[in-house]
Length: 144
Image (tube, rainbow, N blue to C red; front, side, top):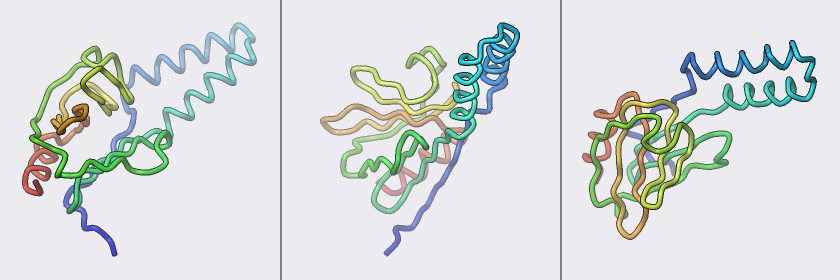
């Protein structure tokens, strides 16, 4: 039995500054003949290339996966969500990109901009970065 999706979005690290930074460090390592540094920066580049944030809204909740760091989706049941709202955030709001923790929130983001914040009962809030935040919030609200 499959649970029908009503929304799906996949995002990657596509910011030019990330790739320029990785390339710059790689060039410096190459010039300095730092073999280990070049191997490390190559591994970081591969990781950034492979990382993707997948968000799905299904009949029973919101699913978030930050692959390859998460082996499976994190499920947030609609029963746990008190409310959701579209939110704006910068890279410094949660301390950067990726999976970020604060005392009251877990954030999943690949870039600064917009996202949806889920306020959960007796748990940390969850912020999910999205290039289509309004559409994501609408899909969640319709299912709740």
